[in-house]
Amino acid sequence: MMNKYYSFLICFSMFLIFSTNCLAQKGDKAILANPWKVKQQIEKVVVVPVFANKNYSIIDFGAKSGGVVNNSEAFKKAIESCSKNGGGKVVVPAGKFLTGPIHLDNNVNLHLEDGAEILFSTKSSDYPLVKTTFEGTECMNHSPLIYAYNKKKVAVTGKGVLNGQADNDNWWYWCGAKQYGWIEGRGNQNDPQNRIRLVESGEQNVPVEQRIYGEGSYLRPSFVEFFECTDVLIKDVKIINAPFWVIHPMKSTNVTVDGVTVESHGPNNDGCDPEYSKNVIIKNCTFNTGDDCIAIKAGKDGDGRRVAMKSENIIVQNCKMLDGHGGVVMGSEMTGGIKNVFVENCTMDSPNLDRAIRIKSNSRRGGIVENVFVRNIKVGQVKEAVLRINMFYNVYGNQTGNYIPQVKNVILENVKVKDGGKFGVLAKGYAELPIENVLLKNVTIDKVGEAYSIENVKNIQFVNTFINGQKVESPQ
Image 1 (tube, helix red, strand yellow):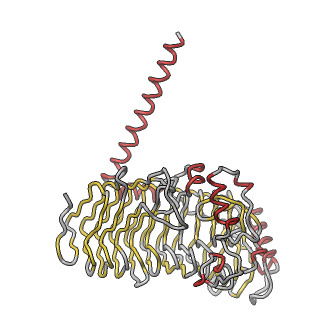
Image 2 (image 1 turned 60 degrees about the vertical axis):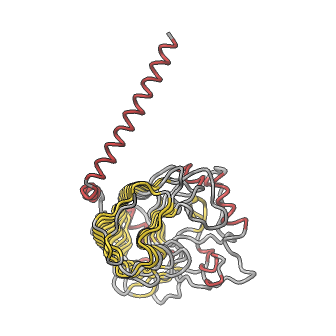
Image 3 (image 1 turned 120 degrees about the vertical axis):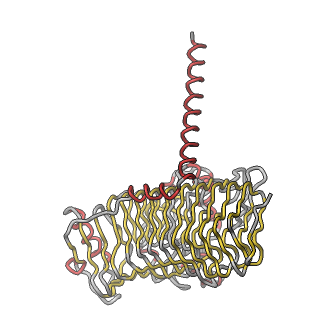
């Protein structure tokens, strides 16, 4: 009797697995058949928060302009009062207002009027420990400059400026690079007790609450971080001089980044880094950065496998990318996986822009990137490649392991490039798990060194694609 029972369980389990796989395959087929229809469906799901028509000026809570007096308490009181009374706008009027970290609450829109500038303290001791992340590993570290944890309906809006005041004397030198002000005797993140210890704690599954960093650890905080938030908006503001990643939606859902300008050329100054996040729209923005303009992430190594969340349904549209390591990038922290990325109607152009579209991982990261759709892109100049897929990305020493990354279904169409740099397509995968299904359709690339350089790529097709004036045939 028991044998029959176990046989039934085994058969039923196999049926469930088979059914789930069939549904997944149908889902993949549906999005490949009409990806832009799926994009429209995602847009309908994303909720832009609406706030009560009530204003709470920081002046009424004791804030002083001039950039000298620390207004942390005024910001805190205004936000508390706004949230407690049903929400609305916390208004920052024209002027310069110095503060420590700003922690948002439910139903609060931090609104900077035209001419307003928030100057963030450069004293690391002003930033208390909070649950956050550094380069894809969760930890307790300095609070981001603007932070929301487990909140619903939060926003940062307006025509004002968020100034992190980071430079070679403040925050940036923590990276340990001489070009950013580090000199012998100064602390930096590369001390074995800092970044290396954090990565090891992720590998060893140390509880996040026990990963204590902060003062003396030299792990820079993100600028704007929404951690486990729902219905998020950041609109119109200009963000300059960030310590680290600039806009970081972390484990968040329904996020809109609209009309934001990022100008920050420090180390790891990615413009926008959705991580473990779902239903994210980045539109009408300008990125001029010291690292990737947009970098979609999903955790790193052992910690990414612990969290095991995808970043999915990410839309980038009508954006302008200037300086940066890449225009739209996936990785390298992508262990949890990245799925359904849509990029359309963007312009990318700078002698300091290395690649237009980039996917990067390695066998220590692992992870999968699937369903990347790019259309109607105008590229003026890039240095290295229009499309770069690197499964052997290597920083911080040996990055090899037992987790071979996977990339499949990458489609570029209606792309025009004036100066393509060294390669049209530069892609290298693993023989055990090749990069799969890459399509360039109606693509024109001029002034490029080589049409493509590929290794372990399965099913790459060129359809009506011209490189240096010559029509490119698909490899056999």
